[in-house]
Length: 125
Image (cartoon, rainbow, N blue to C red):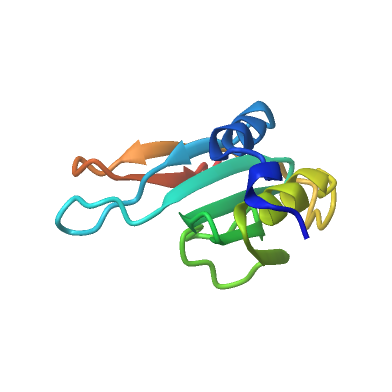
C-alpha cells in the first residue's frame, strides 16, 4: 500500500485529464452551491465523464454519444469508481476506441442555462 505522500497531488491528476482533452464544469444546486467537479471529453462515438465528489469518491464512465443526460445516464458502456488516483489511472489507460458504438462522431457544445450551470447539448445534424 502506498502512503498519501506518494500519491499524486490533485492538481497533477486534474492536469493529466486536461492534457487528455477533458473540459470541466461545476454543477450547482438550486442555491448555487457546487455539488461536484465534472470532467467531460467527447471523442469518436463516445463521451467520457469523470465526476469528483471527493478525493476518495470519484466515478468515471464511458457513455454512448447519444446519451441525453451525461450527469445521470441511463446506460454506460464502462464504469469505475474509487479514489481519485485509481480512477484517473483507469480513465487514462482506457483505449480511445474501446466500446465504440457506431461510426458517427459525437458533436455538440456546452450551453449555459443562465444560472451559472452548463449542459452538454448533442448536435442533431
